[in-house]
Image (tube, rainbow, N blue to C red; front, side, top):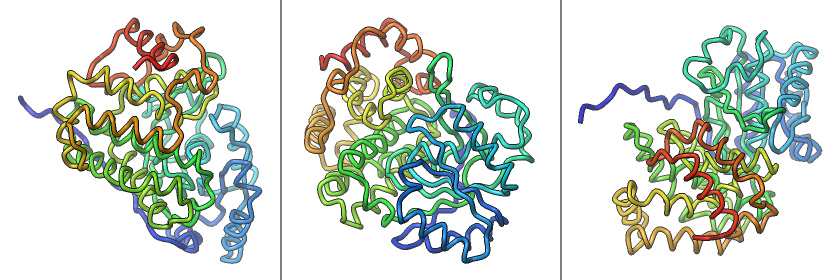
Length: 386
C-alpha cells in the first residue's frame, strides 16, 4: 500500500498541573491579550471559583469581562450574543472556560466577531473554512473544567442548527487555542454523573481515533495511551472525586482524545450528534451508551486492532475481553445500557439515520454504514439490543 499524503498537527501549548490557573493573566499577556472576554456557562459563572479567577486577572491589569449565555448544547443564538458582547467590550481575545459548551462557544466568538458570513458557512466541509477572514480571528486561551471533549486543543466547535436541529461541526485551523491550561483542581467539584459521562466522551474519542481507517500513526498511538489513562483513572475520578491524580490523568486523557481524533471519529459520534440535537441529551452520556453497539457493529474491520489494544491495556480475551471491559466500566460508573433509559424513543429513527449518514464523523468509521444500517443500529441503541 502506498502511504497517502497527510497533514499532522500537535501545536497547542499545554500547561498541566494543579494550581496553574494562577498563571492565566501571564498567559493572556504572552498572547497579546489585554481585554479578554471570559466565556463560560451560567452555572460556572456564578461559582466563587470563577469569580476568584476573574478577580485575579483584573488585579493583573487586564480589562476582563464575563459572558455566560451558553446552553449545554450550544446554538447559534449563543454565538450571536457573544459576538455582541465581544464588540461592545472592545475585546482582543477570548478565555474559553468550562466544559465542551463553554469552550466551543468561546472559540466560535473568537472566530465570528470579525466575519460577515454565517457560522454555518464555515461547516467542516471541504475547504469551507477558507471563507473566513483569518486575520480577524482572535487568540484563544482554553481552560477545561471537565475531562471529556478535549476542545481545548481542537480546531472545531459544535453548534446545533436552529432549523434542522443537526449538530454542525464548525472548523478553522486558527481557532485552535494558543494555550490550554489543564488544572485538575478546577475539576474537583464535578459531580460523579458528569465525571462519568465526560470520561466516556474522552474514551470515545480515543477509541474512535485509534480505530479510524486513516493513516496517522502519531494519533493512533496517542489514542491508545489515552485509553490506558481512562482505564486506570476514570473509576477513581468518579468514586473519589477529590483524587487530584485521577482528575489530572483524566484531563490529560481528554486532551489526548481530541489530539488523536484528527485521525477521524466514527459511528459513535455520527449517532450521538443527531440524538443530541433532536433530544437535547448530554453528548458524553450518549457516547457512553452508544459505544458498545458501534464496537460490535465494527467488529469485522477492527478486531485485530482491538486485540492489540486489549493486550496493551492488560485486558485478557482480545476483542471479547475488551467489550466486557467496556460494559463493566459503564455499569460501575452508572452509564445506562440503553437510550430509552434516558427518555429517548424510537419515533425519530428515520431522522437520526438521515442525519447520521451526513455527519462528518461517519466518514471516519471503519465501515461506511448505509442509512438503513444506521437506522437499525440506532434502534438497538434505544432498545438495548446488544
